[in-house]
Image (cartoon, rainbow, N blue to C red):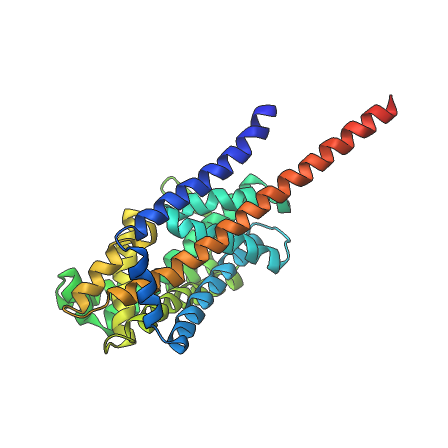
Length: 319
């Protein structure tokens, strides 16, 4: 038991150290003056629009967790769920392997709120499914409404793009159908999954795409300050880039989003816009999330210390 007492803070320090390292790797191709110059070049109104879209995305992500807690049978106030979600995901986005990294942080924070290991696993699983549903819907929208983007970036033919668009769009519809018709567990080969109630499934299908639409809007707001581009073009390109980065477990889509944007807008000066996007969507939330996590760890250790001293005093008094 004493070993676990020292292991828990060591894990917390390890998570923060890894996150700082990976975030530094993300921004090391830009020097500080370049980052500051890019941020200063964006008007206050434009910066506010970018920040609002980023905040809307993280707000959607708190909805992922709220649905997950409900699915797991937990009873936690939304404000506490939102704090756990924003802390874990702001770090997980930079660490990479988001389901595992943010899942580890979620377990540490949710366990303090009364959830067990199995319940936290259910929260992480439902959040991952919501991400998949959202990405499928966004991919379908991009493929069907902007097929030329997928053809240019992915090197696909018109029929392939159409087929993939229809297939991706069928995923959330099939999920809703299964939620209505399947009672209990759904088994696919060696995997089993307890389908959520139709109400939760419908909320997943709605909030999942909304999150990705907000992230694409954040990127669009940054890019449209430097070049003329259509939102649906950005949405389609971001969906492709995000799919590739998730499959490769690239932290924050590092390099993938930049490559796709450069391919989409050849010759355009969009480096500054991409820096601003990463600062607003990744760096600022990371700093806030790291601070929140560190403060929670300090508060936890302080509370544990007070409880241990109190127990020792009571023990001596009883003697």
